[in-house]
Length: 214
Image (cartoon, rainbow, N blue to C red; front, side, top):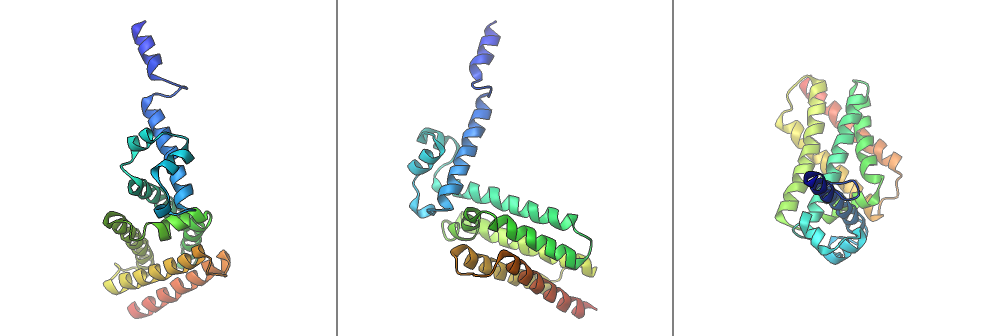
């Protein structure tokens, strides 16, 4: 009987302590995305995040050290979703470079452009906040470039040489700058036009490298 009472005491609303903590963390992540993706990280306090999440500050510090830690977690969560969407789209496309390039570019662009809050966090809010976040941002860019380089190299039947990897990094930087402009409202092109242009640039670079290794 005592064990049954103890077990009941550990559960609240059908959730145990670990599940409740996870649910609170999810609420804080959602609040972070909303506030960092609208007002911006520099303008948001822990108190505002807690108010948005409907939690006390005690529960904030249960999951995060500070605002930067929350921003890092929001960034990590959404960059992983973007990466997964891109990889899955390429894998599901016809095994031609044209089809896979377009599928991957479209998945990437739509994954970030589908929610301007996500685009703002990924492309703007993490810039220059801390050395750790800058390292994560740079690694995300390099991961994207490496994925594109390996995709191209696979179709060429080679291991990607330094020149191809450098070209993929240059393309990744250009893609990000276009999306920064779009996020800030400076880019008037539609998402479809952006996808088409960036896919065209990817394939033009691919064909140049294909000619070099022929």
